[in-house]
Length: 549
Image (cartoon, rainbow, N blue to C red):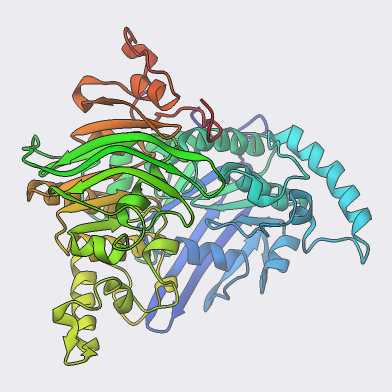
C-alpha cells in the first residue's frame, strides 16, 4: 500500500509546529564527526524516512533524540517547544519511543512483564500487570498488534517480538515512534504486516520516524524522506516527488546500479556434492530431510525459502559446526573428497583448509567477536596463516596491515582497524566479514543473508564481489530470504521448505509466484500464470510454523 502523505483525514499543516525539529545538531566521537550541523523537520502525523549509507550518522542522530547521546551542539524541539533530553526516561516523558534494530527484551520474561518493565506503578507488580493487560488488549485491537500477553519472549517469532517493542512504546504513551532498521530481521510477509501497523498508527495521529536503507520500503510507506551522507543532511523531499534512483545517488554521491550486471555462468567441474543429507536436532526434530544438491565451479546456487526451514542447519553443517547433539547422516563431497559431518575433522578450521569460506547468517554471533578489534576479526580463523607468523608468535603488525588494506578495499567506515567490532554499524560489520572470507579466495563460498542490514551502496559492492568470485571459477552457495537478491544473483535456484528441497528452477524460466508456492510447500506449480506472481521487490509468502507440512 502506497503512503498518501495524509494523516487523520488531511495533509499535515506546514505552518503547525512540527512533531520533531532538530536545529544544528552536531556530535563527534573523538576524531570521528558522526553528525555535522543537522537540521531536520518532521511534521506531525506523518511517516518520515531517514536513509543513508552505513556509518552516515542516522542511528547516532536518533540516539541523540532518544537521550542515549548528548549533542555537542544544537537544539531539539518537540511540538514546537525546546526540550533537553539527557536520557531515555526524558525522551519517554517527551512522548518519544524507540524500537531498536536489536530488541531490548528479557527473553525469559513474559510479554506482559516486558511491557511494564521500568514502568511499574509501585512496589506491587500485580496491579501493574492487571492494568497492563487491559491496556495491551486495547492497543492490540486498535493497531493490529495481536500477541499473547502470557507468552515468554523466547517463544515468539522475531516479528512478534518486534510487536512487543512497539507495544512497550505505546504503553508508555509515545506519540513519536522511532524505528531503527525495523525490517532487517523480518520476513517479507512480516515486513508487509509491519507497514500496515505503521499506517494505522499514522492515521491515528502518531508520528513515525523510519530509519532504513531499503529504497522499496521508503517508496512504499513514507510521506517524506531525508537523506544523510557522511554525517550531514544532504536532502529532504516528499517521497512522491522522488525516485529510487535519485535517492540512491543522493545516499552514495554517485550513480548506483540497482540491478546486478553479470554475464552468463560458465559452470565447470562439481565442487560441492551433497547426497541425502539429514539432520535431527537434540530434541528429536528433523531439520533436514534428505537434501541433495550440487554446485559446480563458476556458478551460484541460490537457496530460496522462508527463514526457519532448514537453511541455517544446512549452512552450519557444510561450514563444519553442526548443532551440538545433532544426528547428521548423508554424504558431502568437496572436490571429490568426502567431508566428515560430525566428530573428528568436522570443524570450521578444517573446512577452511579444505577451501571453504563462510559468511554466516548472524554476523554478530557467528561472524565476529564483538569485543575484539577489527584487525583481530579480520584474522579470525586465519590467525595461523604463514603470512601472520613471526617465529613462534603471531605477527600482529602484519595482521593490522592486512586488515587496514581490506578495510580500504571494502570501504569499511570508520577506517580504523583498532576499533572494536561492536563500534561499527551493522553494515560495516558485515563488510568486515565479507572482506575476510572473499579475499581468502575459497573454492566454495557459503553465504547466509549477505546483505542483511546493508545499505544500497554496500549491496552493490558486495554483489559485484560475489559475481567476480563466480567469474573466477569459484562455487557459491547463496542463502537469502530476499527473492530479488536470489533472482538477481543465482544461476540456479533451489527452494527449501520444511527441511526439503521442493524444486529447482532457472531464474529466467520461473516467476516469483511459482517460487512463492514452492516456498509454501506447494509442489504442483504447473500452469501458474504470471499474474499469480508478485512484482519484483514485493515478493513474499506468509511464514509458516517451522515443522509444518
